[in-house]
Amino acid sequence: AQSVAQPEDQVNVAEGNPLTVKCTYSVSGNPYLFWYVQYPNRGLQFLLKYITGDNLVKGSYGFEAEFNKSQTSFHLKKPSALVSDSALYFCAVRDDSDYKLSFGAGTTVTVRA
Amino acid sequence: DAGITQSPRHKVTETGTPVTLRCHQTENHRYMYWYRQDPGHGLRLIHYSYGVKDTDKGEVSDGYSVSRSKTEDFLLTLESATSSQTSVYFCAISEAGTNQAEQFFGPGTRLTVL
Image (tube, rainbow over all chains, first blue to last red; front, side):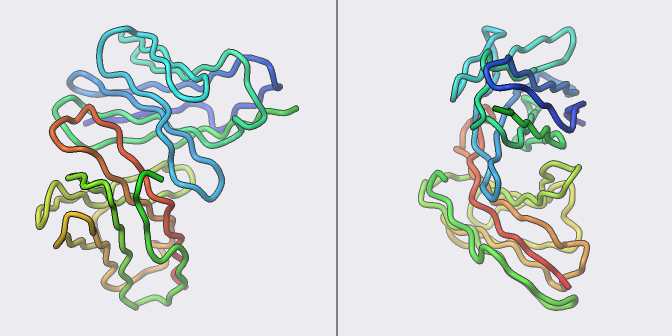
């Protein structure tokens, strides 16, 4: 079985400050990890993924994520948040033996001007 | 939205009526998925397809059926809609050949069952 936990329902930061959205996962095999963002009344947009290799993954819109195998975490980060980063963020995991994705419950990010 | 359309975009129906949602892709991707999105649950997989006429159940498949007669179309049917099926439904696609590929999502269908 595979699962994802996003421990924070909401994250609030000021514009220009660093942004972190937390994600922990559980899989039986090797994890493939993904981050998606959802703007109001839109579908999910792919941000980045970790498959193998470098633990620091860079993605779209200045986002990056750090894979930590010992802590089973894949936190999303952005050094300097923008008001336009306000959205709903989802972490997802797939076991390397499966095609199905499991999503976390989502974290709402609000960046205030 | 990566060449994926969903129809209708909004639908209100009554309990007990059948409902069919359509997902259409222009990417020629082999894998297609139906999810539902509910507050506090993220996205949950209903059914998925790994080719024409090849489908399988996800984690919340009860009350739903799917069909895929063409590569580009994946239909989700609620045989007899219930209020618990009020949700936002998303279709997604991904490339075949690797489970490393990300999924691309359609714009969603908001379904209300009264």
